[in-house]
Amino acid sequence: MKIYIHTDLEGISGIDSIEMVQRDNPGYRYSIERLMIDVNAAIDGAFAGGATHVTVLDSHGGGDNFDVSLLDKRADLDPKENKMWWGKLDSSYSGTFFIGAHAMAGTMNAFLDHTQSSASWYNYRVNGRKMGELAQWAMVAAHFNVPMLMMSGDEAACVEARQFFHPIECVAVKRGIGRNKAELFDLDKAVSGIYEAAKRAISLVGKAKPFKPALPMEIILELYRSDYCDKIANNPGVERLDARTVRKIAASYLELFPW
Image (cartoon, rainbow, N blue to C red; front, side, top):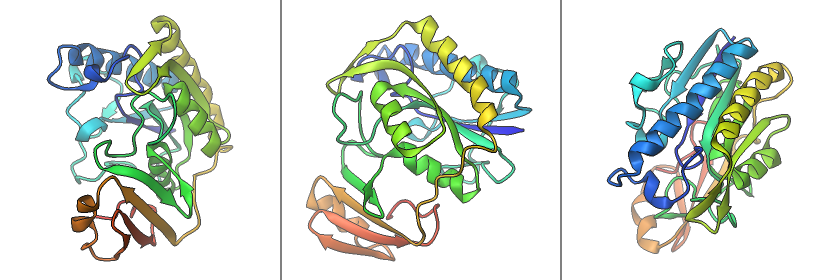
């Protein structure tokens, strides 16, 4: 039984300020160490639950966040050689986890809420429903008929996950205070919670279903400024609706982005 683990940084335990996810900040090194601790807990839990193979993707900011020397040696690290967001993910996997998730743009009291780009994306909707990166990743996995089984992140991300997926195992490791600060939960309990949730999540294989909005999908992206639309609007298949909004009709769950 194969499990694919997607990762982000904002929803990792021990990270409580915006500065800690910035690569040029002294706190970034500690954040990477916490990232590896959370990921390893999920890997360990997956194997304890019955997984026979676990692949992990370093996805925050395009990658280069993992300290591979700290990664559980049983895990298969996805190098993303095809330059796509999903790397090795295919239909041979029984489920996916999302470790370190954050809530979608515009969520109140959600630590570092955003959808893809906090600098330019304002709202992202699929078939009229506002979505974030949790749903986006679940749709990528659904292309390969792989369901979302488990996630960890802040409380707001857990609420969001339960709104989109059922059943799913969720672990909150902190609580957002506004956007740029968080109240951390006990680190040992956070890590043990990830392990136990990952272990339980294996039992959801065959019960959880892939997240599949109706195809073709209408994707509407609102950006913060009109100039952000200028380049995107010139891409094939993209229609500009107004100064800040573009629309695309996608025939596949892999066509999530209008560029």
